[in-house]
Length: 212
Length: 212
DNA sequence: GTTATTTCTTGACCCAGATCAATGTAATTT
DNA sequence: AAATTACATTGATCTGGGTCAAGAAATAAC
Image (cartoon, rainbow over all chains, first blue to last red; front, side, top):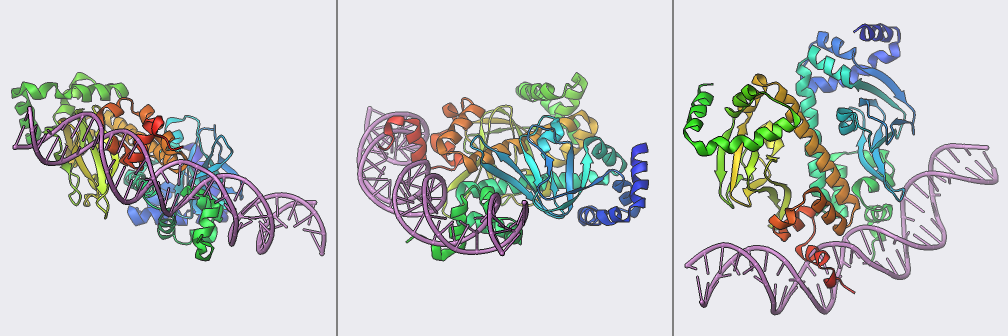
């Protein structure tokens, strides 16, 4: 608790870090209305962190110590296979959470890399901080359960899509579920996310280039 | 609570239903050791149910009211697309849990069907029963979190596999992660689970039939 | 035991998407 | 501004797995 109080004081002194919580609190309130007092308590548990483009938040082999809330910027998680090919598992934009749940929960080394695709402002939460926070603001249990639920549904939908849809259908579904992604993410990364080659994605975006 | 007590008494009168809890309690104890008293409390919340082969536990459009623990037998969950093709999402054997988490949690109509592939003995848990049980035996919170965690990891692994492996690799991975499945599940259902056609699966099982 | 269904195998053929390769076009770096 | 490096397009060609069709085995039904 001493550390949390010191952090609170620290944040007070740095106006820049103050409005970093805006989006987080807004997102929480959308699902679980909380009082200003609870908001204040909540804030004390997060570690603000800025990440420059291309910097790692997590590297394969390390234990994932944080779940990250994205206030600003964009990240991705991915694996690298034996041939050196990257396979993107997830993107995360403003208002999204990202971590390796498995490594975070079990404290086993992660098989994922997470890095910044743009300069980022993050709010990090450690396991002990999360637990203490849930004791102090029990309402948030619900919020975190909803998050887990949503990610389970999203990944199920993606699995079905990858098993029974064509490349084009998968691409359309991605655009629909995440509008604006095409403007921010390089094409070859979307291809990796969809499990298709960059060439195929390019072709289906420019129907003129289709084979005869 | 009255209902739970009545149920307890009822079970006492039917020796057949008594040993139905063996596997469940064993599975729980593997992950979260509980006392005999806690076991006894735990038992009162489950509804034993037998299901004949081909009977439904859940039909598309209905709300999923139960999570099911499989004491005996085997089930599957699946969707049917607009062309009438079945897409199998999951199998569940003895010692596994099965439900549509999304429908169960949100009480919205399910998009899945769940039916029995063999005669089954199940233990059903409703949402209110689950909540009450977790209050009475808080240790189980951990058990259920572990379950959710594991299913998230399993589905992630399957997604990676479906995006970047060949049909043969996916099949091998299925056999490895679920030994004995080939002896119990019809081949065309494994094909559906893997997102390939029955013909392709047949060919890769009999390498002689490979094309030249 | 015979018939009907369901499941599995095998063949011939086709196509979506991969691979290989070359060129064009931003972005970064120096 | 020139030079690297990273991304995107386009073409030519190949292939894993799909589709269609017809038997063969195995189960279930009567």
